[in-house]
Length: 65
Image (cartoon, rainbow, N blue to C red):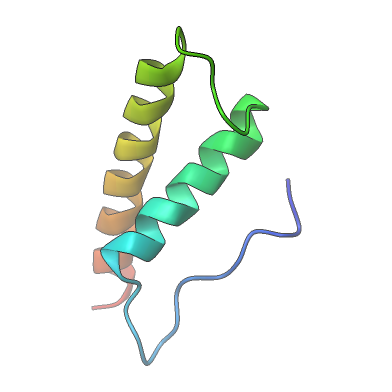
């Protein structure tokens, strides 16, 4: 999809909530095609970022155990 997405998972360190949120934001920007959504789309954009961050956090908790 995109070669510029940075790897967050490091075996010796956990990704911080801020890193997970930033990665979710980057993903939503890439998939939506919007760097900054219009006011009409802002709620949907923010909700997607929150949902992806939560799913990402669950994944990281499961694979780092």
